[in-house]
Length: 263
Image (cartoon, rainbow, N blue to C red):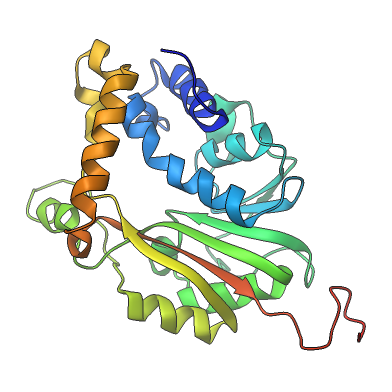
């Protein structure tokens, strides 16, 4: 089946790179699983102009940096883990900053230095690294330019059926920290940011699809059908969907230009 847009092309490339790898490429073990990131790509394209400098905060395995570089953004990584995990995607960042668990909050960037910061399944793990979500968002607000955006993706929903089910299965991964819309509003307001979009998504499981037969794993038709079913069910059952996404913007001072001069 022909590639229909740039995002599908990038996802197909990541799936090809994931073949034969157990970690860190599990979400790309099937095309239907990889499609979980298409809403993230669309969110970035909607709110972040091409050519902007974007921080992949808590970069992990580097797949989001691959998207940024392939989409003509300038990508920077900040990570507390081993940066070599990104080798499977040829280390796609222009710059990698290694943080420490001794000080997981401070970021090595100047005031108002970056156009956008993205958290892809990271914010909920901050308390597990002796950090604090509110303090981290305050630090992110500091390094964003006026009008810059913080994009948060894969933030666990407190009433997710998938997390609730996983919590009953011995050894099954589930999130210790989960959130409500009120939690998001509180964190965003506390950091001095403006919430511009928030919604729940993802009713159907994705990563488990890597266990399907090879023909189904690589089927674009199956991925299309899974997406349609997910979208159909997510509307009436949003309350038990797996995740939240939200976008928050740094406020621009009234009567002030981007460079801080008065108009």
